[in-house]
Length: 566
Length: 53
Image (cartoon, rainbow over all chains, first blue to last red; front, side, top):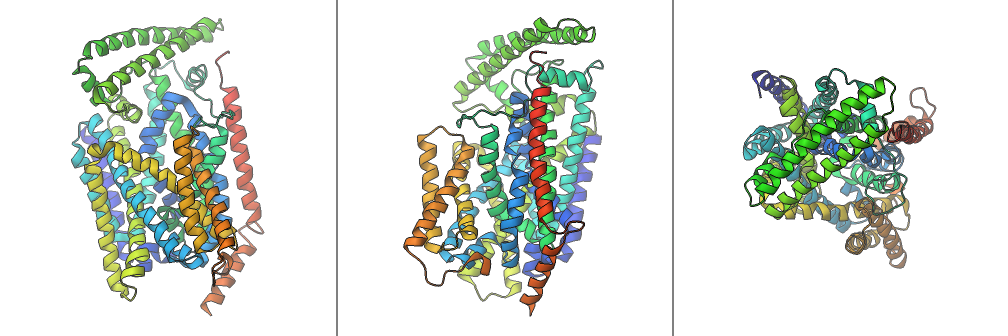
């Protein structure tokens, strides 16, 4: 990075920390620390909801995904506007009127203590490890691309977030989220403009759209009924719907956000704000990937974008094979570049482009195959799966963007990571203190004592996240397993909340056994079928609803409360 | 008393939202927006498919 990049990066950090410390003065009492005294306007809450969902992997991973497979990932986000309506109608009024601190607190009011404790514990395990992944994923990419020390990157990102989240509580977190989300919006716009700027002068918007279009990169909707395909309109609208409803409706890191709104109306508006903005934002991020795809028709892409994996292959017994692939890739790239320029010229002159178009597609397929062969070499050497997708966009940034822009884009990656981490820390702290410490250990503790414990809990979870991130390299497959197991829980948690809202006869026994049955059913489906992981949440939710209703009917509880009378 | 005033403010919020008489037309707009998004993306999928043009 050049000096101007460091200046831009420094301005971002100073702005975030300064704002957090300024806002932390409003932080009085438990309601102030965890819910900003339920005083925030909808625009601020809405941006925080959006920033919490957008992690660093959103930027560096989904752009890479679009580079490899086009726009089809957008289908996962399509149900989000509808999800926001369901949240506004069903979830938010219950949460808001129940005057709760955590989503799981509502489940004790509606069902019983064991359901609250089980769901809160699932959240703590899942999100606690998730905090580590949020830190580790961008740090490992930045260490390879920028040559930064991975541990130092984790510790700097983690330490600054821990300080402002611990001192400032939710108010500082939400206001910094606002800044971080605005930095992300700016970054998306600048990235698109920069990509156009680094293309040859003769290639404009129309040529970019055309070159993407001849290789189906703009294809956004897939009507295939195949349930094993991850990204179709059905997996998106059905599986994505349940996934988003589970995330926004039952995950404390999101519920806590809209509980900070100054009124029920502001809570709803903050979600509807996301309903309108989320899909266009995701479309813009994915477009960056397609633009990169077109860009590398004119500039030679590396055989693998992850320089660490290239080094592994080059220093292995397969180095000769890898070098041969490099030479072959260079030759095919040159042929594709010439064919691309010829195609654009022929098209401008109104000539027949059929054979050139077919050539470009063939070269594209050959380049993909060569890249897959290179990945296989890395997998053979390392004995673990290759990960190149997350390096595509950062690799472009380091090599091609002008001074100042790189600093901004690195700030965007930091902003995305920190805005997710800070929300997770306050959510983990609130669940720890409200659902466990106050409920099970010190029910009679004073407000001052609880506030002190809350700050310690935020600090603890921050340090825990850093520790997980520091050892994530060694934990490798364990973290992957945690991620997979996480998808077993999400749908079932949603099922418990749906049971609470929709089934009047439901009781604590039904909810608890339904939760266990839901998680078990997802495990069985995952082990015995090939259906897309997006459907796991549907299976989990529906099983909880069915088993929970049946158990509640067979074993009615005395004194069970209905959600509408809470 | 506090509970009553909370209920009253909630009822008031249900009564009118800006230029809209209730939340229902706003939710309807969001549903319509969802449908338009799918249609727009389907149009993009077809219009920007230059694989045979």
